[in-house]
Length: 148
Image (tube, rainbow, N blue to C red; front, side, top):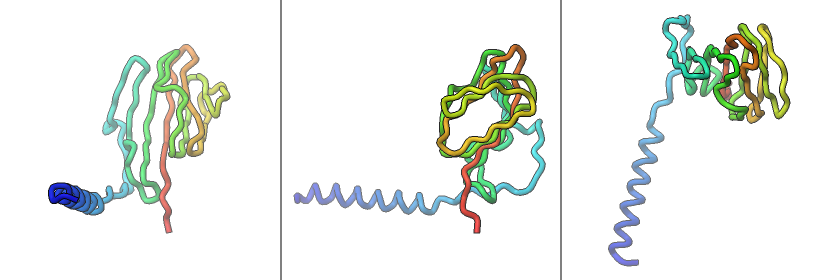
């Protein structure tokens, strides 16, 4: 091994060690404290599909979860935010008003106000407004952590 090659390897090893040390020292986000979430405090976004009001953004830590998302969504007639998808989180979707179609593991099911869907991690799921009025629903999505 030449001196130059040795120096390059040594520098790369040092940078890797330093980067790993910084990553390990990165503080974990604080767990949510008990509190009231006001609708006026939500982060709101909208598009041609409808709107979303986010109470706790994806990645928020709680006592029992490494990541929690809570939000209210409204899909306009004929719209959806995304096609059926899957992820590592568990999820509940509760229909507040309107009607539409749920997709769950390749099957489609009608939905109406008062209905609730639960999906396990990695199950395919989706929701779309197949009705003629806005569809409003609440989503609660989380990744559990081990609590002793």
